[in-house]
Image 1 (spheres, rainbow, N blue to C red):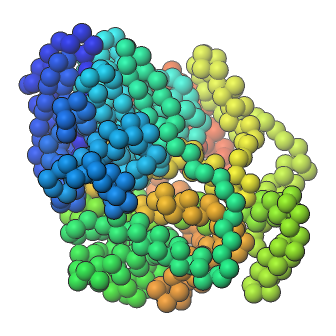
Image 2 (cartoon, helix red, strand yellow):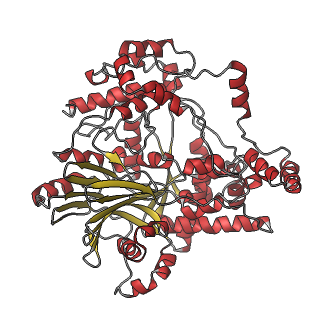
Image 3 (cartoon, rainbow, N blue to C red):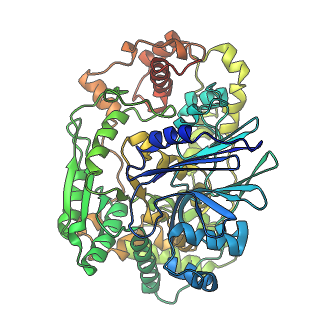
Length: 613
């Protein structure tokens, strides 16, 4: 996505154009296709343009149609035909086919803040109402692209790039200790709106922000509807409806030129690749596609590349398996590269960066298969309870009995029975896993034990038959996952788009009867029949064959205790106790156990860059 930064001074003082040009240059790692700045009446904006879809994005921002509303940010819209129809009178006033930013401005002019419930796509933007002196900021429901902001004194600023805030003198680099406390526990904050810096906040997915009169308020603008299950007369109707939606989602996300595809050996990414391949063939552009598979070889035997190769061959795709022989936890980045904007729990991030750099030369847009697990590996038990509550016993017999007759087994209930039975038999210890290596003063200051208890409260669910999927989609999970693929972390201007997280698909899937369609991705397997190899269609859901940390320990190529700790971690972690805990650990070393080490490495990098005050 293009890079953007905006600053508003409430006193109306002019913003230095030279400083804005400096910031635009800082943002050019996101947008190498040109920069521009804009300043007016206490406003200052910097923009760096990344060309990803010719003819749909405007190369210079902010964008305005009437001199009242000014838009700065990333906007990529889906379902343009429907939106154009709804805005037909406004669109006719334009002399050309509108760009996506212009479409959003027209929608805002027609519906105001309610327009965010009408538009589909990926967006992370700010919109200034020069007449009302009001700033609106929005981030799409899934949260595919980041949005940060800070309000300090008389200055309000925003950007999709966290590090750029360090260039604003009014903003402190002091850390948010609650963020650090959460990160030490499991690598992420319970409050997604926090960043590692006290003064800088993150806008949550599916929310808009309003800044007016020196006050900031946030509000969720969209919740997915909870509706009754679809009841089509014929099974084929479910399959065809899904195929049509998936084709729309992929088509809307495919650029006019080259596109990369992430291809694992499974169903989700294979389905996206199959549809993309079909669309490219229809337009006579099969050569525009290239699939990439990330491999864990030679660390351990990874079967994914072979399965991915089967799919690529079946679809006629150019295919490259990306391997890297270096497996060094917390390996330093290449010389001259900056540290990550925040601590990151990915211990092989330097390797991931190198592999991403091999994807970017083919295309700046990559389609991924994320999202298929949300609803399509649904729970049968809540659906059984839903039907039971409604007294639909005959449907229970037909549905569950029919599944047994066709599959020779009952669908996975996933009711949490084993977990409940295990905890009931051995007794529930609320302090199991609580760290003994936290510095006591820090522990008291952030009330870490209270935060630990809060994490273990059993969640409540709203959706009657897709409870966990619905809760997961309304959490900040996908925003965090997709931020990990942002250019600020992977080091290259590469934009990931996720068709299976399209809102049209999600609304459809949340109305699917979990049995049979969401039992081990039954819908996807039937929808892709003859479009994917039989070996892929019948392959069960698989996890990584081996824990990479176990493989490293087995090879004796890495030991956690060898790291020379930086002074930055000592106010938070008793390092000697922490290392002793690692050495005494029995069984596999979990990724979360290395969160203190991830934080220590990040603090050391920041210290070396002169960022700790």
